[in-house]
Length: 374
Ligand SMILES: Cc1cc2nc3c(=O)[nH]c(=O)nc-3n(C[C@H](O)[C@H](O)[C@H](O)COP(=O)(O)OP(=O)(O)OC[C@H]3O[C@@H](n4cnc5c(N)ncnc54)[C@H](O)[C@@H]3O)c2cc1C
Image 1 (tube, rainbow, N blue to C red):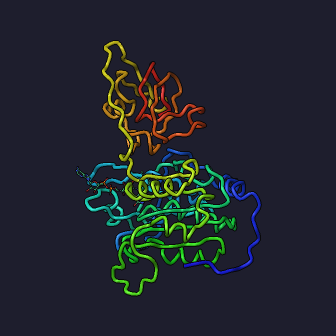
Image 2 (cartoon, rainbow, N blue to C red; image 1 turned 45 degrees about the vertical axis):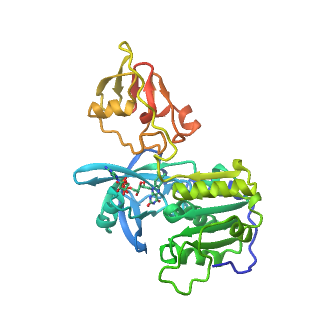
Image 3 (cartoon, protein in one colour; image 1 turned 180 degrees about the vertical axis):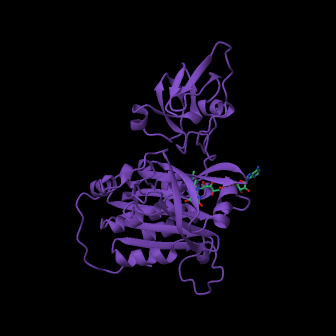
């Protein structure tokens, strides 16, 4: 589980190098956020009894650029209906020819079960370009603390794989919580990576031992005591956390209690409903009716100012890829070519994208007639 002591050439400008590698013109092409591609499944890997990784290549076989920790939105045709869900790209951008997602079966869940039951080598699905700001390039640091639980391991795995592939030798303490040892996703690979890199330390904590009678790591939940034991310098570390809402809230409390600076805390939630209030529809004013024209299809529809552009487009029969409807996932990002909207997002779009004219249609209401790049 722990690293071996080995000499390793220190890397210069760690985060510059990571950013350079990701934006490197490697003959591939940028996959713009929100742009649709067809992906072909090349491999399915059983990670645990209810978690599988699906590896894909792009239709044109070209490599793809993204940042470690980002997610893509996939569109599945389930019982004749198109359904979109976000999945973190668990592979690293340093291996840009294959994109993988790692999916946990959710009891009663539509897309997770559909993927487990239907996705085989040779199957295809539609996916929308990477989004998300939960990435180490957004918070440069030489010392990191990765805290994950359950399938929340995926973004941190991508970050770790990228860091090792680039020889960054970033100082990482990675603590993963699971129900039982059998539920630890990427258990062998994390142990192997920790052996490769003297500055990656991996620890597991499980609520129970399950069938593994010889489990020799702690049981229970992550505590301040375990944290101080495994990462005594945690106050100096940039913290990245991903897992169920209850886990993240407990981790946050624990870190605050320990005196960690909240400005150095970053988290990704897979539960897009948690903590995000959906924007209520404002009371419509009779006069506030606007026309929306679509530049590519030359279609148009009218809507009132109380509706979001996404809901009006859907009511008008316009197919727009979307997932969360709460300004989080970024799937419905679209360029507004003419006109203005009032957008209240929840982190699903970056300032530089807004400057380029993009808006999230799910949380934008028109304040004039619009022309959309659709
Ligand atoms: C940024 C981001 C990254 C993510 N990355 C990953 C990842 O790497 N790996 C991963 O496994 N997941 C990830 N997720 C979660 C993923 O997007 C899905 O939410 C998850 O797979 C469940 O989707 P589903 O379609 O299977 O379940 P859903 O159909 O959405 O159902 C979810 C739950 O709601 C219940 N439910 C559904 N319909 C109803 C109803 N009508 N009434 C009552 N209950 C209902 C279901 O029983 C189930 O328990 C990520 C999410 C986000 C936002």
